[in-house]
Image (cartoon, rainbow, N blue to C red; front, side, top):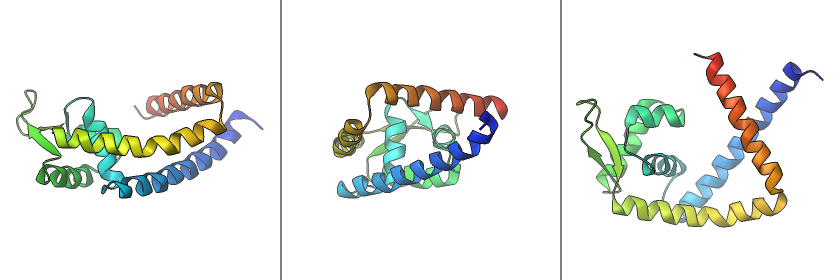
Length: 145
């Protein structure tokens, strides 16, 4: 089978794996009173302040969907809006102490599942998979520029 013939099989498997991760993520998030969507926003906003459009692009969701999630997180004091020095009309999202606490709970809840998966695969296989997936992501980005 040629490389171009393998790509559709890979795409199908990646979609199936993504769905399995989403289902597992929903189950984990539910245990700590969150949702998968909120977890994704918390995680992506945790490393640096980002605008809602930046979060939406990173997550691959519509800006309006991410805006609704962020507004809920802000209303619950899990996140806050801060001034964006580069764009007055597009505030940045920053986690509050409570947001970081909830993210730590989510991360701890996911740890058990991740450790179980890691027992099934070698470190080398996982490292290779990450490298290949990132190369595929970069190739996709290059093809859509």
